[in-house]
Image 1 (cartoon, rainbow, N blue to C red):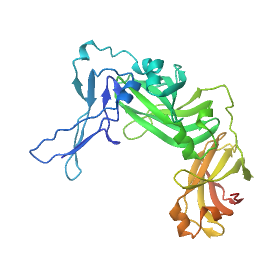
Image 2 (image 1 turned 30 degrees about the vertical axis):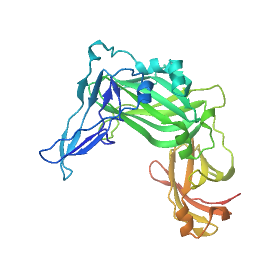
Image 3 (image 1 turned 90 degrees about the horizontal axis):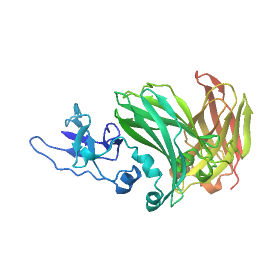
Image 4 (image 1 turned 45 degrees about the vertical axis):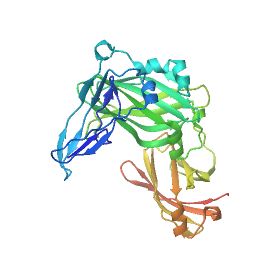
Length: 359
């Protein structure tokens, strides 16, 4: 049989009342035998959760046979330590940790923002704490704490991340499992979200962050109302700053080409801002791409709600240029064929957009 604990598909693990997905075991055990496994904890992560002593651990296993048939999901199994009887489980240790400047300094992070305003309250799940931390490398992490006071486990989902008025990540960002009577800490890697979307936004300059929260059951169906959450993290500019070459403006939809650039992995990006004031939610699909008159295989799409500004980032890897017998530095012209649909899948337009590439 195969015993898995802490996988993407099954993670019910917690420490001191906080969900802890990093607890991981994956062991194949033949019939009639046993295996001794070790669980490792990251000490700095425990400190970030405000956990200075482990009073109890709850872990659960997804067990399958060698034909991958389901045998058993154990649910959370509790292990108590000698600290259990005197431990105060009513403490919100994450909030305590975030207010401990000496601790944060020892972890080489700075607290840029904290809030204890109510962010979400539905379906037995409440969220009334959010924090923004920057590490010594300049990467900014957003942490959102939620508590499940209900009687059933749920997934707490974050989606559609918007930074300074630009949706840098449309769709689901994360969905974390939380058992009844447990806390969960959700994480938004702001630098990664912005990089994925291709927006010209510096994470350090994000003054307003928006995202949506909703609860999901184990079949990924929504079991609560969706709410847009706003974190005002600074006093500066919060509206979308769109710069570049306007290449399309019809039907209340405007495309701005922000340019071509190469990332740290030597992948090439063609980035568009899409401003939608059409009165409809739209999906934009890339149907064709020609560089210097040569077709290049590429697929990309994005969704932009009415009244929002989103990004569409067309990423090409080295092999795609090799197949087209091109080099990125030789590209001077690009022709993009898009299809724009509303949320009823009706086509609004099929624009062919030519852009000049400035190297």
